[in-house]
Image (cartoon, rainbow, N blue to C red; front, side, top):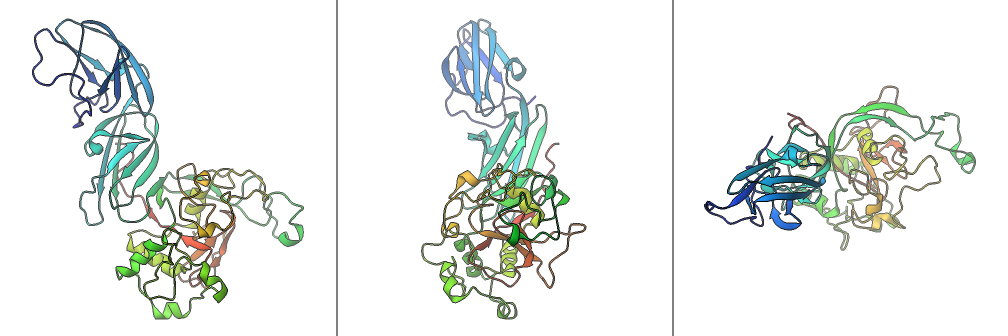
Length: 421
């Protein structure tokens, strides 16, 4: 069991520093550091290496942390140091966490590490004892992207995360699993179905075929790439106009260009004033892939994107549920969603914390190879888009097509240390 000597420091010392006098009675708490502790109802700061000085006799201890409260009753002998270990606390289970984070250049990133809203003492750079339960791991680093992952920490197990933090949106780790691409509910696919003729007289989505897939664990941007982030790639010189590709790229008609968040007729793809934090729109598929390459990532596949957009649940039509009806609208954020900053409608977030997957603008991704499913034709960069529903669209190539109503986000493979050691 990991003891309290994990390199953490207490924000409030529980007892006097220095050598204890011969008459002092002390309690050493062999539990995760940084938990709020009370003795007989009196707050005594946070758990640390420093023993608590108490009166001789019986005491009730209570710990409070990200997994809730735990309590223990202990008898403190006169003038002795009594150790109270984690198993003595009812309601406390312990795991170990190690987080190593670097920049793309290999320098230490030194992020703050949180489990829920609880900051892990010492940022978990070394194996650190933590309470064990279902928690959201969050990394926060100045000037770099953050990271989130929902983890079911099991008592007695060790967890490691080795991450590269670059610039750009925070990333969320999506645990892999089996999934059904396509609409929820019974499969009523009918290749002869006429959507336009029957719009008011059908249930489900009989015009969309379903496919069973297995999705591997991956990381994906929490938010869409913004206009100012896309512009930064041009300022850095990595993204640049490619005459051959640009010549064949279809821009929006003149009456819609004012809807774009970037000015795609300027060499640096400058954001339009006031739109800097809006999703980068009027970006072609080849341009989106170039940006993701610049930040060391890639576009998500449509299987990954749909899996994440529907909160990993085949029975969901939207990020938040939605049931089995095409009359339900996934976007509950109001009119003109393409005219808002990213992550401005948290009620539509996925259960894993992703923003704007089924509201805001549509998004681009690459077409995954799924047995029996046709691929888009004449699509060099293999990019497709999704729109009103996370499982609709995906057949039209977006390689050379810019739209004011479509943005993108990036993803990456997971190649970190295993979850459990």
